[in-house]
View (spheres, rainbow, N blue to C red):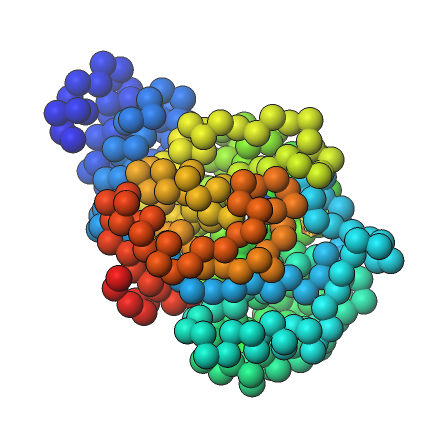
Length: 369
Ligand code: V47
Ligand code: SF4
């Protein structure tokens, strides 16, 4: 590694590469130079150096399943392939019983997590969501409930006239364990106005995660990339997350989400090539020095790219997921029916030269494979 860095001709780039290998935090300006000047192989080497300091040769996955209670949403983000208005023939909304039937399908299956997120329904209130949580908790006391993105939480908590802390505490008392990363998109206000003008802004997203962390709940953070954003806007997004993580330490993982173009109002945008996906994974691994994990969410990016991301700093492939996840299959991801068995995931991780570790929501080891 040292030899390789000595051979870097550009002195600015060389200094930044040395900083990364020495474990020094990069400024936004340095990150931008790295992004612009480093070739893909250097990005891979630097990100892998950081990844190995964080998690050695382990690559994590979990056994989870998703429930999407509704695609009815009061908002209409331009990139969303999934949203429908109430009354639309293609809309769906699961009843409490239907949700519990999904939970029961996993009776006896050793899953450790259920991930629940969907559209922001106009007429369901926080007490409805709390009741769903307690019914799930009763049916499966052993699994962790990761539910409701900051955008869903913002809507239900404001509508109830509560503070974020009060709202999240209520949901936590009914069974909520952690918060998924959805809704972050890209924090830059001008760009946000163009792609998702109506929903919770960056400050709201961060305030909700901060309130959750202060109550002892963990969460994830995401970034929607590959649409109209600049590299500087990506770095600004990550900087805001890094600052919050410095204060709370409550984020488990950062999850870059590649923009997929089918069936939405941004279909004119050409999706970024795989090299850009890899550069972005690597940059996030290097820049987010206080995040323990970078997740390659394979239903969004496809299993081959997810596998390749393991050479660019990602150390988590999320989970074995059944076909209840629609948000990505509708937006044009390669895997139409996103399900991977545990054996398949383990084989994939080994094929990339890593050790497969099954984890729970908070990255405690469930099993070494
Ligand atoms: O916020 C919507 C994204 C997110 C598109 O926390 C799109 O473990 C690409 O956040 N192309 C929701 N992305 C999903 C999410 C998530 C997924 C997996 C794991 C976790 C976790 C969180 O999906 C939305 C938005 O950023 N999204 N439409 C699209 N066309
Ligand atoms: Fe609603 Fe989420 Fe789709 Fe935006 S991305 S329209 S908030 S379901």
